[in-house]
Length: 139
Image 1 (cartoon, rainbow, N blue to C red):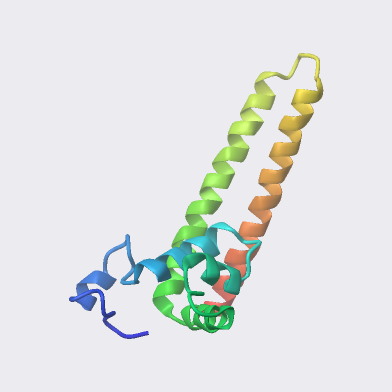
Image 2 (image 1 turned 135 degrees about the horizontal axis):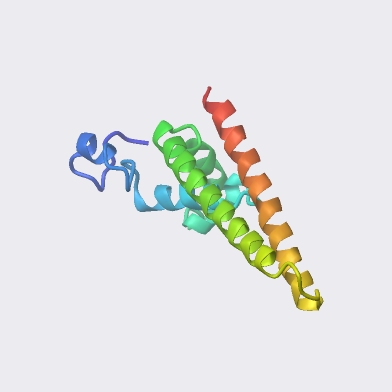
């Protein structure tokens, strides 16, 4: 990856912005997809970000090049924390809803609420594991 990138004229000032981290649109999209969907591997994230215009093996190589770039790692950590906070907020909202309906008869729709909450909590666990993996890779 070139510093500064070709599509940015002033690389040093662009790298300081929190929105883009000095990355191209596709690299930023890769970081966002990689952070927000922990069930996808790096190659699948690169394909979804648009790096597989010619062949999938090129997307695989590009994905692992991106994972060695410190700017991409910073973006992945930023988006991972953001996704983790969103998942925690959703789980708290579901728990508050279930707590408000504590003394009533539980039916099958409530079982759906429990299943959604369990899915959010398992997603939270996967997000935390991926974030921990990234932190250990950087350290």
